[in-house]
Length: 270
Ligand SMILES: [Zn+2]
Image (cartoon, rainbow, N blue to C red; front, side, top):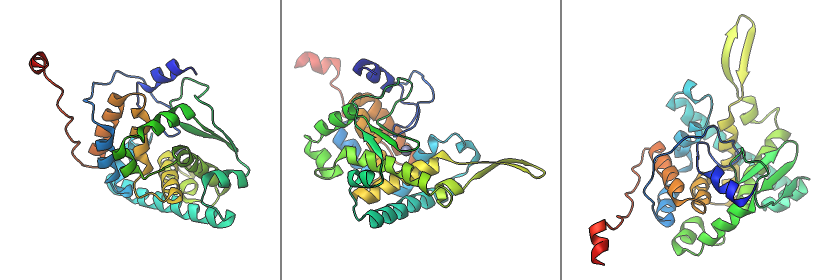
């Protein structure tokens, strides 16, 4: 994927960005652009469990659930991610995602862009053991740390590539423990007919748990879901602002108004 293709692929952010395929392309409305520091400040105040509206909004089976279920599964999935972060950190005696990946025999690479244009993502895991962290996005995000507000909210020296790696590490860990781990054993009954049942995994459980795992490993207080806004901002402040609105509304909060752009008459007088 070239830089231009990647930028083009980022435009319709119909799906979340951490490891999920983009589902559809459509024309999005225009969004007023807000400063990245302001958006991160608001998003960091959303408690990790409060992200269930956003977390399930990308889930194909979401229409079958109600809010009580979403909330309960959010808490269980987050707890699952945190629990397994503790298990692997104790087992390998490190909480550095790079050290852990190495110790677990994972194959991690850091290409600039994804190979294929049909997937919009910043990092991905491929069964059985491959993780790619796409560095163009990480490097763009690193430049945003020059903004003191960003540094203050996200923690000084936050290593974004390690955070992305921690998320993907969880997907490896859940494969290893697939016979016992909540995200793989908890299934939803789609239908039954006599003795025949059709049960399905819920992708959102895995994604939420991966966020809980990454949060625990990186010792951050906010939900890594806000990285979607942070990483998109490097490419499109407008798309990032749209995503911010969606996240705020999903958490039942009012998005802050965008700073006023100077009107034509004001510009004339400058
Ligand atoms: Zn994921």
